[in-house]
Length: 356
Image 1 (cartoon, one colour):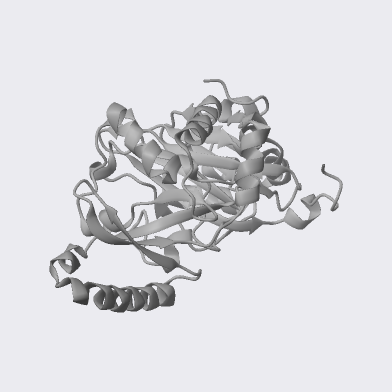
Image 2 (cartoon, helix red, strand yellow):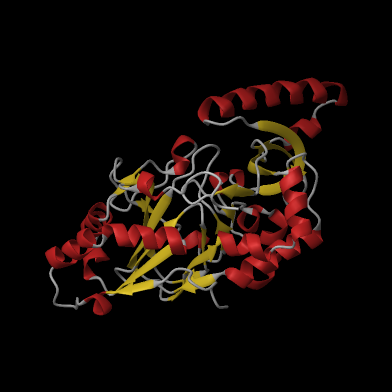
C-alpha cells in the first residue's frame, strides 16, 4: 500500500555524496551540518528513513548519529512498569531492544504511538543491527493521514466519548470460584484492594481494576484500565490534529482476527499473559465491530512496510508517526532510542491558533 504523499522520505548516503568508503567522521560531519534540516524534515514528514550509512551498523555509531543531529534521550516509556532489555545488556544503556524475541516472531505488532500512562516520548530512532531472514519489516503510518481518512462520524463519536485502554490482565484468580459462595464477595474485595494498591504504587498513572473473565476457559481475572483520553491530539510543535490512538495494537478483537493469518498469539509465560490489552470507549462501553473494522481498514490503508537492512534507521516523530512490526522468521536484532525532544525544538513551534 502506498504511503501518504510526503510521508517518510528516504535519505541515502549515495544521494548526499557519501559511499561505502566514507569514514565515520565524514558521516558524522554530514549529520552535524544538516541536523536542523533533518529535524525539520521529521517534523514536516512525520518520519525520515536513512539508508546506506555504515555508521549506524554498530551501537556506538548509532549513538553518534543521533547525538550529531541533537536528539535528547530519555528513559524507555516502560521504565516504570517493566524493564525492557538493552541492546548491549548494560543497565543504563540508551539503546533498547526492539521486539526481537523468537517467541514473539509470529505476533504482528499493530500500529501504535509509544506511550505508557503519562509517558510519551517526543521522538524515536529505530535501527537495524541485523535483519530477519524473512519478514520483520518495520511498519510506519502517518497519524495525520489517519485523522483525515476516518469518517467524520466515527471521529466525532470517539472524540466525544474518548477512549480507554485495558493495560493489564491478572488471570490468576480461578480459585476464588471454588470458595463457598458466601466467601467469594469478601475475598474478591480484599484481593482487588491489595492488587490495586500494589499496581498504583508501581506505575505513574491511575489504574482502575475490574473483575472479569478472560482466556479460552473464561477464568476469573482482574483487568487494569488506564484513565480515559482523547484519540486525537494537537501536535505539540505544529499544532496539527493527529491520530493518537493505539486501537490497532490494543484491541483484543483485532489481534484475535489477525491470528487467522499469522497464528495464535504465544502468550506462554506469566509476563505475556499479564501484558494482554484491550480498548474501550472512555465511558467503558464496548466499541462495535463495525467501528473497529473501519479503524483497522484505515490503518492498513496508511501502513508503509519498511524493509530495513543493517545500519538503516527510521527517525520518527512519536506524535505524528505510528509504528509496528511485521511477523518474521530467523534472527532479528533491531534497537530503539527514545527522545524527550531535540535541540532547536522550541524554535520550530508554530504560534498558537495558526493551525485550524
